[in-house]
Image (cartoon, rainbow, N blue to C red; front, side, top):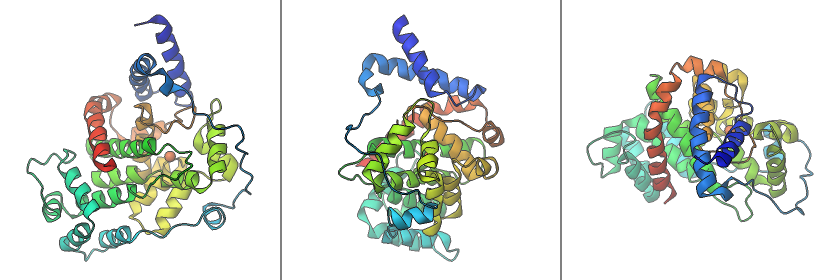
Length: 343
Ligand SMILES: [Fe+2]
């Protein structure tokens, strides 16, 4: 190991984890991060430079909204939920729905059908048999699993790039998928049930962030600059500038769209200390969000990863060593799913 790079990498990791505390989980994740940053400093040092924006972009001069509702009235209007999502959501929320209802929706949207089939065959569900049709996918995966998978994938495809974007969309997709995969694997290891809903929760958790950044270019740049300053975090910057954070907004949006309760809790609670301590969905997504960033699947907006609530990790009940053992599988799944969904 080169001593100069070793020192620079450990300094970098120290800064990244400034707010993270010193639990055994954090110590192990720091080791993982160090290995990755060291490699990156040797192979691709430019990728670690902070992003800059033209100096002539004026700071955002909008008025602080009263809250998420007011923000959506003034700065940006909440788009209506695309038809296929609202049909999926209805079918998932209705106890009378049949497997055939779900198959019908998936079959009507060729892109959705392709994504569901490729994901079903990707090894996330460890099914040996080849799945060739949506009806076989629903039969083999089950109604809930196939439905949540469809809802998650179709929702992720909503996150499209605008011309002048502040948010790096590739990083956003990878972060969302990584958070979904980590949440799913944690829920399996901890025996929390509904892994597919945790996966969908991870895919959707930053919907509020996407909406804030896509709403106004100068607002995005202003938040980016503030969040990038020493020791600051994106959700703190949002709180300062807007008076609420992207989790508040995300929960509000998914509630308006009548998404399943778990997904509302996951998006709305992941930076909300009160929910992080009490709601299993918020808890798991909060932890998964932190872990995804520590593994290098962050948005690279804030100068720090943020903090992890030790009580949330303790309540989930798996050990840091257990998590580290899951990492090779987690990394493989993230790459596979990213490729499938990005196509
Ligand atoms: Fe977030």
